Every structure is written in C-alpha cells, then in structure tokens.
Image (tube, rainbow, N blue to C red; front, side):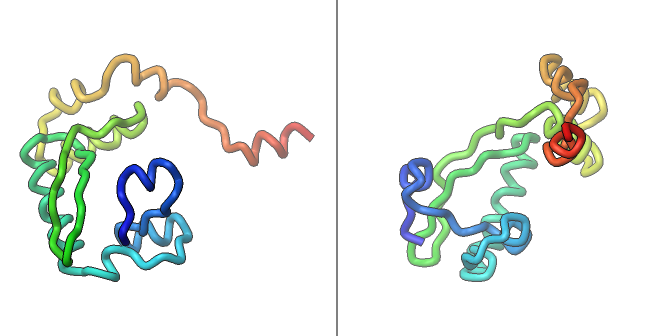
Length: 130
C-alpha cells in the first residue's frame, strides 16, 4: 500500500504480492491484493483477461488503486525470454486465442538460441565441482 512505481523500482518499497500463488512462490509474509481487496483483485483479473484477448498477447499492465477502486494506467506487450515465449504461445494456442501459424510466429528466431542453450541448476554445478 501507498507505494509508487518509482519507489518499487528504486527499492524503497516492497510491493505486496498480487495473489496467493505469488505469495507462496516468493515466500512473502505480506498480505496479497487477493486477500486485502478480493473484489479489486477479481476486477484486475477480469480486465487483464480482456486485454489479453483483445491484443492476443501477454500484457504488462500498470495500474493503481485508490479508495479500493482500480484504475488502469497503461498496458503493453510483455517482454519475455525464449522459453517464456514458447510457453505463452502454446498456452494461447490451447486457449483458442491464436492458431498454430500465429503461435509459431510469436517466437522470434533469436529467442530460439535461448531454447537451445543448456540450462543448469547452480546447485548441481556446485556439487559437481567438488
């Protein structure tokens, strides 16, 4: 609460998690928006879904809440890694938002390098170096 975007970026404020899933994933002790303002959270989920269906792209959404009222500030296509681009394209294909051709076009050729580069767990790497 009471955090401005600049405060979060500068590290002055820690944002509350959006929902219970994010709260669990980040081991946050802060109350989530879903817990604090369930109706605002549901409205944000609804509007986010409308924007994704309209733009047929994952959206990076900026919003604010004043007096428990949601205000949308801005939306744009979200940036993503190659692995995320494939997952999002597959999810949107499965949801019927895009067809197979569009799903293939969603993955930039440069992102394929990320898919072909091995990913190692740092803990496994440390254990094998001993």
